[in-house]
Length: 150
Picture (spheres, rainbow, N blue to C red):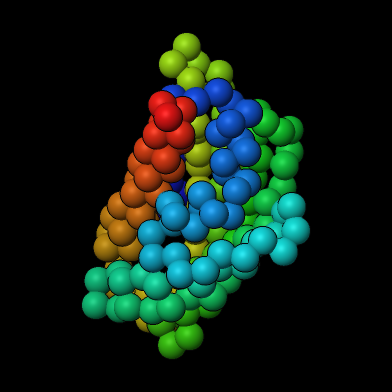
């Protein structure tokens, strides 16, 4: 499954990049995130509870950030295990472009799932993934817009 989208954030690119590397901001924006621990500048550990259709699962996972050309672009890869519910793994490429109103954030994400989750059907999984990513970026943009206006 592949997701692509872009969102305009009312903040300078260096502020957006720093926020994407701030575990407190990320924890507040990731739907269902209970815990986010930064082990290094490139390694994070997360605990997230998600409900996808009839399946509710607590995922434990890790994310590794690769700052390809900061602050213009970076990538990340992650994987999570939801026990009996299954697993998810994937990655994303993020590009931050200067824009007259702030920063245009573009992302392309790829994900792969297995276990009970994979049995739910690709349409349900894809619509849930789109909803969760939209929720994350809307919350992220709102946090940055609020911080820029205060």
